[in-house]
Structures are given as C-alpha cells and as structure tokens.
Image (cartoon, rainbow, N blue to C red):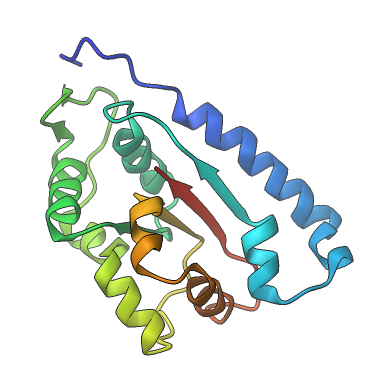
Length: 172
C-alpha cells in the first residue's frame, strides 16, 4: 500500500464479534428472551462497529464479501456505491493504491451485491423480498443511513427475508 496510514484490523474485530453471534445462534439464547423476530435481529444478530475515516473499513468490506458472496452491502449513495464497485472490481483504491493479496470481483457480481440507501428504502417500503437470501447485510455508513430509514422498518423487512436469522453488520 502506498498510504502512510495503517488500517485497523477490521477482520479480527468483526471475527470476534461474529463468534459471539454464533454462540447465541448455537445456544438459541435469542429464543429464551422471546420478543418479535425483528427485535431479536436487532438485539442478538447485529454487530455495530465505528472507526475513523481512512481506517480500512472499505478494504475490509471488499475482502469480506469476496469470502461471503451472498452478502448484501448497503452504501449511503450512488457515488459511494459506484466508487466501491470500481475499487472492488479493480483492487485499486484512490487513498491506498493497489491492494496486495486481493483478487478483484467482477463488476457484474458487485452490481448485484451492492445497493444504495435509497434502493434499500424502496425495497423496505415495497416490502420487497430479495431474489436471493443474503447471508448477512453490511451497512456502511449506518448512522447516516438510519437517520434516513427507520431502523425498525429495516428489521421488520429483514425478518421477512428468511426463516433464519440474517446477521447485520453496521459500520460507521
């Protein structure tokens, strides 16, 4: 990488938090607490992480979705979505330069995996079922996005996407 900024180890951070969700899932802890499925998704199957700008979050998302191709990624707007797809399909980041040890994904696959907050909001309002069940939803810029989308509506919509519990990873 060409930047002097050292990215955080987002992989280690999220892996540790995902282990906690897996324990909840295996031990069925969420069922002991009752409540609605949207409440359980919010309280037991959501990871929230916050970090400074230029700390490697987008790089982590790129690498993560390469390993989890059924993930759905939500970006704040068209410009951020388009830049993310450009970076993930070339491995070339404006701030960091060319990524080492990264295999770019096809722009076509990324186009299906990455949506904007506006598109997510339209899906929620239409109560639209996704063509393919996402393995997890990664929301980049969650604070901003959920100032514009009611988070309770998001979890109601997410709960209808599968009989299983879909994890959400909220990143700021």
